[in-house]
Image (cartoon, rainbow, N blue to C red; front, side, top):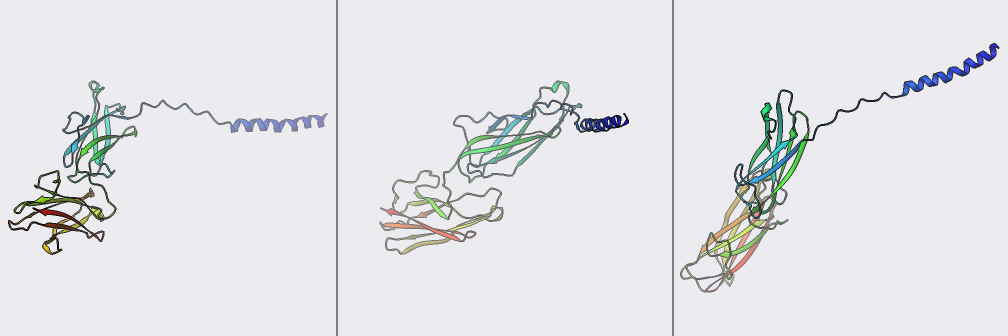
Amino acid sequence: MRRLRLFRVAAIVPIVAGLLAGQTAKPKPKPPAAPAGPPLQLVSPVVSQFEDGTPLEGGQHLIVGEIGFFRFAAVNYKVSDAGKVQLSAKVQVFDSRGTAIAPVDELAIATALSEEDKDWRPRFHSQFQLPGIAPSGNYRVHYEATDEQSHQNASGDASFTVDGPNVAPSDKLAIQQMAFYRGADDEVPIGVAAYRPGDMIWVKFFVTGYKHAQQNAMDVTYDVSVTDAAGKQLFAQENAAVEKNQAFYPQPWVPGAFSLTLQPGTLKATYTVAITARDAIGKQNVTEKAEFKVE
């Protein structure tokens, strides 16, 4: 009888131990997560020509060199028990080639709301200066905001159109759109480059494809010369213009313009204007020529 009783005890102990071990290994259920509030949202982005002005619509656009204004609002931000609101934002504008035209504009809103302000929408306001020398096309405003109390983030993009010269980018030094004009303010070149003795000749062009150094430094110069049909040089001016500067925005081209006055006794013939541009940083140079007639 004792052997049978001992055998039964020995058989039960491992079973009980296994049950206890199973109960110990079972994980405790986690408490349900608190429901999250609506996410921070940025709404009503507006690009305008004036502060708090109407949005640019349809064929409206900004012009290179002009000041633009941008604003947007935030909703679903956190208001503390004491009515505190604390938001920060960043705004940056990019040209049609994806290049930032200015550093990031950092903004902040910190205020306290009363019960009467429950429907108030915080609005961020930013303004930007378009570069005087910049490409035309669709520009982009990237904006983002952070709720410093809930640590939520949101961002968005808005676009607008800029009117300016259409100058194609170049991977090497080039002189583009060299043409003759009647006057300094003319925007359309003359159809036939023909002048009379005593006339003033205007030549306009763009220098592109030069290299930039640190801080977008550039160093471009150009020479001007005139030769007759036999190749005899009649006029020459070295360093007729020097473009040497640095800025946050990398200047995409150098606009060139100069005038020549024909003397009353200038012979009726065909003449050649030559422009030689030099890029000191990129160690490159290029010459472009064009002919005009004196009739």
